[in-house]
Amino acid sequence: MQTRIERSLTRTIAWSGVGVTFGGAGIWLFWWGATGEGFRFLACLPATALLIAAVSCVLAARSLTGHAACPHCGASLLADSTEVLRAIHCPRCLGYARVVRGRLEELPDDWVDAEARFTAKVPEDVIDWPGCAMCGEPPTRSRVHDHLVPDTGLNLAIAAVALPTIGVMRVGGGTLHQLSVPYCDAHDDCVELDWESGGLVIRFRSLAVFRAFCAANGDEAAESSGACG
Ligand SMILES: [Zn+2]
Ligand SMILES: [Zn+2]
Image (cartoon, rainbow, N blue to C red; front, side):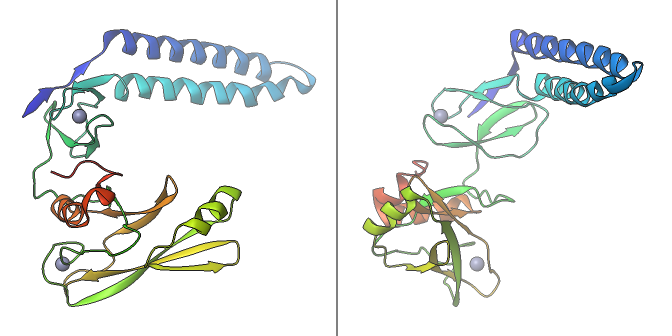
């Protein structure tokens, strides 16, 4: 299913208006600072900041004003019609979509993204791997990925209660999580580990492998993403 990306006129006018205001104030302040005596030249610094803010607003007027209905659930999503092939994650249904020629459409089942962005929770006990973490074919080897969670009061409290079967070790300044990830001969180092809401998550590049991982590991893995299915 496809939905049309539309530009919001009100938001375009609002962003452009703020940009023009910042730009005008920046130019005036720059002129005032550059033509004055003594320390007035210091005004050129905030003037430069205002000019940068003005350019950012103009860019926002172009890229932050498009919206389209999520092709899965109908929720309104920010989408830039000039953008090509970026996976957009719906915060309501947690489904994935992409921009194609001014429209938003469901991501194809065989989608492989340039970035590791399909995020699943790593189960704390047994992990069922659907195959190579990149293509799903039978794995022939594995690679240990690690992720360091720096110490904060909160992390320490979580580390004390979380006991995953994956490797966890205390190192200077934090907790190192290690996960052995299966790959076939053709693939290596294709996933990323991260720490989200007090738990280890794995990010896949392949939508199919991500879904298979969620299906194999049940609700626990899907909780973080919900996009399984
Ligand atoms: Zn949705
Ligand atoms: Zn593979």
